Image (tube, rainbow, N blue to C red):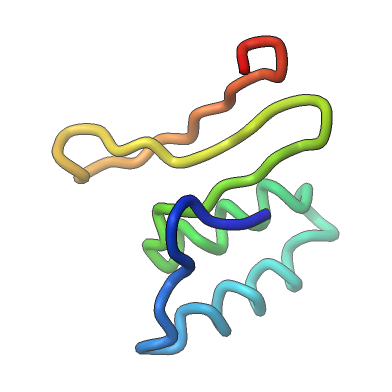
Length: 78
């Protein structure tokens, strides 16, 4: 779990909100899904995750940044 480039700045408390949300939801969701949701809710669109031996996941911008979708790159496509 991490970020492409820079992590969110602390201005406005986004990092604390992201961690709180991730911790609150990781048992009901997967660690990766909870991480992506927590970051999306805080507009931290540079969040990413690597599922060891399986895939790399990140947000992709579409339509000039008005919509974000999640891209999964399977290990065999690296």
